[in-house]
Amino acid sequence: MSTPAPALASLATNRAPDDTLLVWDETRWEAAVSTWTDLPGATIDLQIGQGAASYGAIFVATFSAEALASHPSSNAVVNATVFFGDDPAAPVSANHRFVTARGNPEWSSHTLIRVAEFQPAFPARDVTARLKVKASVGATAGFQNWVLKIDRYNL
Image (cartoon, rainbow, N blue to C red):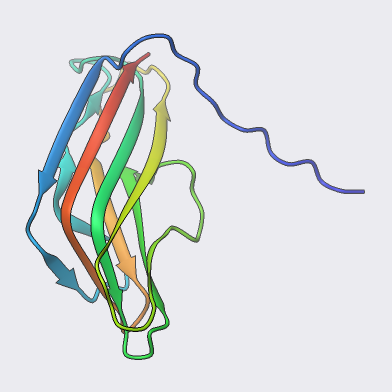
């Protein structure tokens, strides 16, 4: 007997986002980071609950950048994903490859989209969006000319 695939999450909307927030930077950043690390500047302050724009929301994050992965053996990856507060956005997995080291390192353009849903609740909550990256041990991650965009759909 096979196990059925999990149900797909989806959102159908016939309206524009309630808010669109953007942050970007052209500065080159390179670092050897083997644990989830904030990409400097790739942060957008977000709140839900009492005193915020809404008690709940669905956030759609789009991140695009020129990226680089380098490693002496040309065998490494740089992972990237968006966290909302302390929680990684969906889809969540152990494999968030954004760019792979192969041969001579070269900058290339990449984009990812992530989603986070927070059901309405009265208590105020900080769900600040942060782009986090981590590289294979011994590898260097590089980012430049990036943009982080958050579309907010209030619930």
